[in-house]
Image 1 (tube, rainbow, N blue to C red):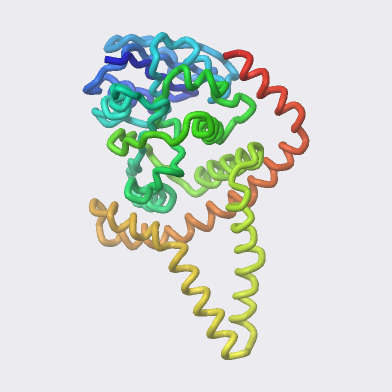
Image 2: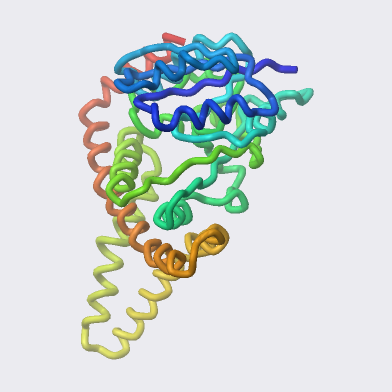
Length: 335
């Protein structure tokens, strides 16, 4: 059986780390080692990690390290040929490691396996949040899927071949890493049963900050350019034009504009509402109404956050283009 190193990074995760450690201990397939890189926690995170006795665990302390740097440090310390990667703030399905490493037992093992993660809500707001932003497994297009590093596994040699995670990025580093793996080795094998439970953001403020930072990372890494162009065009050109049509006083134009607005809104919220209906079974009727009303607001706040963050990242990229290239070379040289 192929041996596996499980790695993740932490920063001030004393409140969430016990659930993750419990879920690691409950795995049907045990990791051969667990390596955690702490980025400078000021709470009890490191003490909780060092107190773990149920499985072999190495703690690397690297104050100031971002997520990419922390992952690279943990993987460099790994002793086994397959690396499974997850994240703080989640819990693992008991068979997660079993499912995500099973493809590596094939006669011709893949270079990388994409697991999946699902919403783990505690409140009606979080149910609406999960339905609004997290796809379900049957929505995934395997040929285009790029996994979150909350749930991914790869051969250590593949990580080394692409230069590891890009340490010049503070967000979206896993997307850039995925792109590099796909360009070098082809599609990920998809293991939808390798499930990680991820709690959505619990407030609009926290959600705005999350998506602002994601979009800033897109701008820094020059990711998803046309998606952002479509978003800006929709909000800055198409939506004002339709609202002007509704207010124009021309009955035919008003009707056409109103119909297009209704159709656009329905298309915009169709997937979130379809997910919500599949996820709200534990909610009371009044909570279901609350969650349904929140979906359009969450989508709107997310789009505003992206439109605010993306140009900040683009400006950074333009200002640091030479420095960024040098850092990429440094990151590759270190491996």
